[in-house]
Length: 98
Image (cartoon, rainbow, N blue to C red; front, side):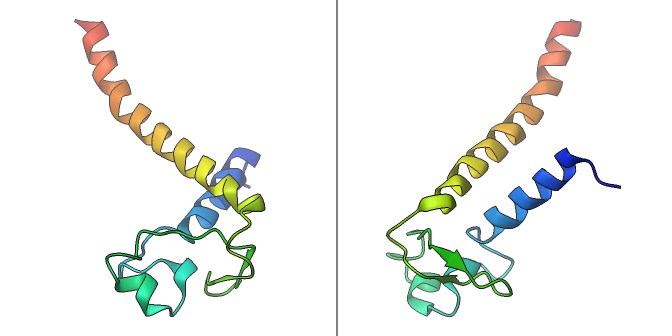
C-alpha cells in the first residue's frame, strides 16, 4: 500500500511530466503543434493551459489563465530543490565526519 507521501509524489511527477520533454524531446503539453515542438524560438515557451487531454497530455482550453496549472511551477521548483539537497547531503556528511 502506498503512503500519502508516495501518492503526492506520483501526482506531482505526472503533472510535471506534461510540461517536460520526453524521450523524443517533445513536451506532451504541445501535442502535435510542430512549431512549439521543434522551432528554437518557440520550443521553450511553455504554456499553462486551462485543462489537458487525459490520454496525451495535450494542452487544451485557455492558455492565458494559469489557474491551478500555475501550481506545476511550484512542484517543479520543489522537485529541483529536493534533488539538489540529495546531491549535497552526502558531501556535507563527509565534511562533518572529518
